[in-house]
Image (cartoon, rainbow, N blue to C red):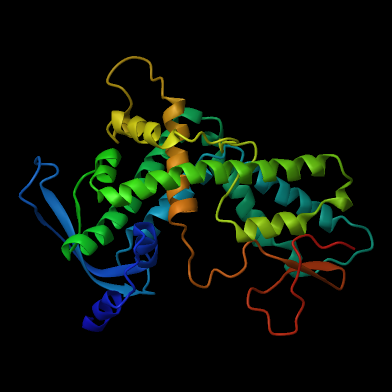
Length: 340
């Protein structure tokens, strides 16, 4: 594994701190150990030390940036209370397909296993769909974990650049972890937070404009290729009729860190000691935004072999099929929304 360390050390050392971190976050570590750091309070008197960075190894090794992304996505999905509508719509379309007169249905299109799973997922989701408070606690527990893991991954690579060791403190306070980063990196992140505010607001406006155009045109005139290309090429996401913001103010970043700092992370699990639980909506809003800033703007995650997402389709013999992600040369490229 000495060779892997040599590979890491031969990377170009970018002058820009954020570029430096982006290049190195895909590296995973084969080893991790915890030891006393001899500084700070008892809780923060321990540190984790990573070693043997390797590119392109599986998630069984230590890459907290990628691991945090899984927490981020799970939190975002939990935030969508009407998920069951997608499963119901899938089943409805399946029934409609099988009832079409005079059109033979290929067995693979019936999707018995998928239909069964859709029914089970709808049943599983029903108790939490309207249980907003507990669902939001899960959202924020995941989101704080995602933010923490990303910041610790950034901290480890920043420490190596400055001190020659991959390390981060055993701490869960998001604001404190952030403020422990090198001052120049902190300045760059804060500049990027304002760029994110403008760029995401522009992105969301483009999405809303597309939806508005769709509402004023007939179904066959909807430009799904333009929409699909934007979804595929842009790291940003916008879930309509959810908590995703339409406008991000320029000064959002400092307030977001402060709101997530004011309560210990256990607040999302347990609530106040006594009295009615008024779970703060603003905290949820900024927690989601901070997660989006890290994982969709500052350090987007791209998994190897991800292929083309969302899927394209082709029409063959009157049926719609998902295009293979690694289609042989010369095959149809497929489209996002086939038309007759």
